Length: 190
Image (cartoon, rainbow, N blue to C red; front, side, top):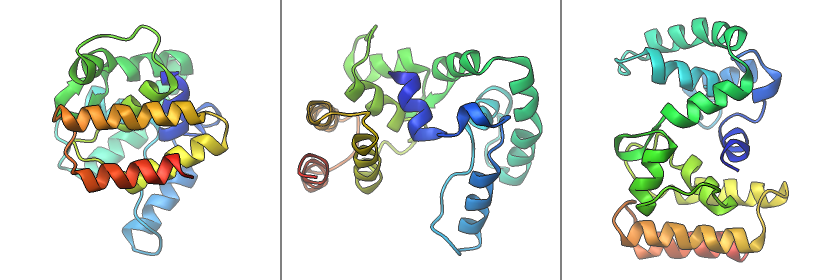
């Protein structure tokens, strides 16, 4: 489930590109010059490159150049499935939790061996959310898309809302009750 939602949320074309998605790169550039809404253009492989090889994230142009240079090499050396395994076990989740095991322990105080669809979605949505905020509109849009694609059922969505509510209650995610209500109404009533 984690790999399924990782690809769905972070890089839908993961299996069809060589580490760089030129479509995502173009969309990102259009966002930078304010023609389209700003969005990330990094593939899973580029994000893995950043995690493994780049320590100074503030030098954005240099970082992007290194990501673009190394991503095709990584896909030529490792299989796509191994790239997913390395990514899941090493990428930064919020509050400096590295890897899915640390993220599970952070949010649930235990490791789930077979995460549900709701748990998998929740974890992947939290990837690199360094401010620990509840990104309500983004979550609603992504959940509705996952439901439309047949990846999440109504029960999955109810369980997901419960996971977010618990994380806010336990102060793992920063949000107020109005944001939780908006999230709940946005995904359950849709």
